[in-house]
Amino acid sequence: MQALKDLNTSRYDNVFGNLARVQMINIYLNPANEMIFSSQGETGYATTEENINMAKELINDLRKTNLDTSILEAQALIAMREKSSLEQAKKLLQTMLKNNE
Image (cartoon, rainbow, N blue to C red; front, top):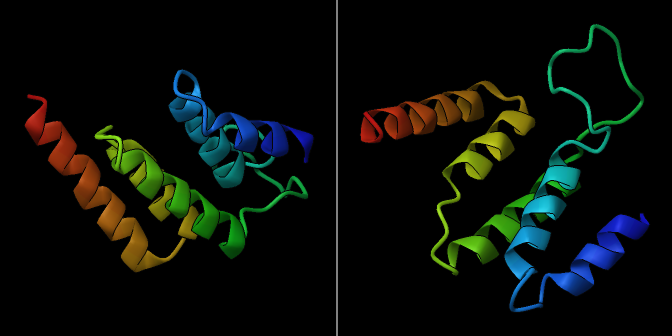
């Protein structure tokens, strides 16, 4: 995918690096660029375990730059579609809500 190649090059840029990483994470977690969980049928695109692992690596890169990655982490956990991961995402999002009240 050409977009990922271009963004991968951009992720090392001092100005646009973090934005490129966020866009890469979005592509890896939502390759069909659809409203997640709103489709009734299959789109033909799926978030694979490899995509999730790449997104996690990029999230770790962002965390090193002192950005709040909580929402991205929750998205990655939701993408795993496992009960334990969904529970972790729920707790993470609830913690964010409590901290922002």
